[in-house]
Image 1 (cartoon, helix red, strand yellow):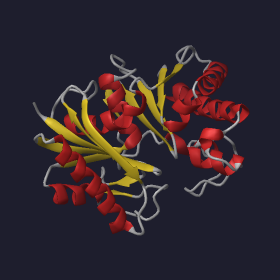
Image 2 (cartoon, rainbow, N blue to C red):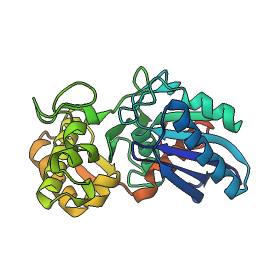
Image 3 (tube, one colour):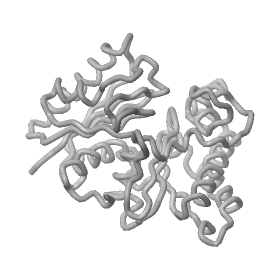
Image 4 (cartoon, rainbow, N blue to C red):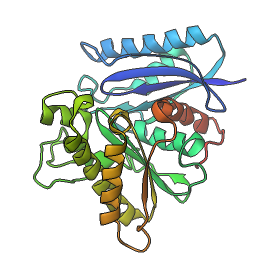
Length: 291
């Protein structure tokens, strides 16, 4: 049976797994996103990938990577806002050279969209939004059965929709972005403690802001489902999702957007790795639920 190596790059942690063509994870490991400089951090992620590969002991046909963005050239280089040591960093090609395998890279939330369409809460859906609400906030859009890319591969970056005009300064340079108001990084700055320890009122505010952004996307793009994953959203649980749904109900009022649902990602904490695997399987011509 064929397998791929899946790599997920986040602002707080990096994870790798071996995943088969049915989306089953057969081995995994993780490490903190820590590096003194660009090459030091690359050595950490490459070493993680090599350890997972060796431990699995199976033949691999490729590597799929999901990373925070933005990116350029369809994944040729990445410049994650939450990983400042990587600016225009050629992660895809460096990993391919180091591990000797064809490698494909996409935004982590776009990868999640593939995973949710393939094995998660969006199976059978031709239009939906997938979101990661974690250290940062990203999104991936599927319309008419196609994953949207945009000119450089950054389509769906909902973390930079303005939800609080004149609000907190974002790493991108704007004020009031969803990422600046509702990400794990923002919550820690607002509350003075880790996002996991946020009080219920802050969890509800986070849900409302995410719901506000989801409603805007539903109104704009004529879709009725948002699958939301990530450590903040899944960790906050019902208080977050109830507040988010209430905001969607209040703000998505058009005939075609009324009734839009916001649901937890069906893959739970496995979503980023299954999504990264789907990036590779899709590139290899295997069906993953969307074009």
